Length: 123
Image (cartoon, rainbow, N blue to C red):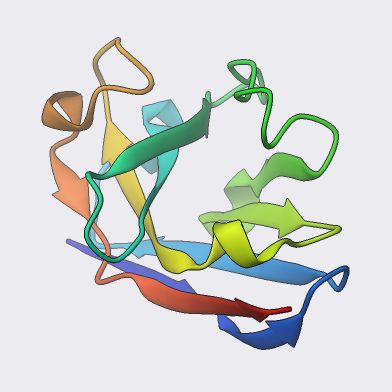
């Protein structure tokens, strides 16, 4: 099983990035919830949101609401995190993960993790 997160990079404040998470080797992948997390230097891992097989999502935290959007393409086994109006405080390693369980923002609920992609936002 492999989750490949990609799309990170260095951008300036106010710019956008679109992260992708491609899943391979996972049977019945359509049934899995895909979660997005991030971890900034010196901080704990933070849950961003998750997206179900039907496209339902959990509300983002206020700091991300209106700027981040989740989507997925089941045919492509890929989930996306669109990030607009990026801020320096969004700088972190962004991870995607997969679970059949509940608890969208609880990292211990997730069975499979990607390697993370670095997002750096300069001021």
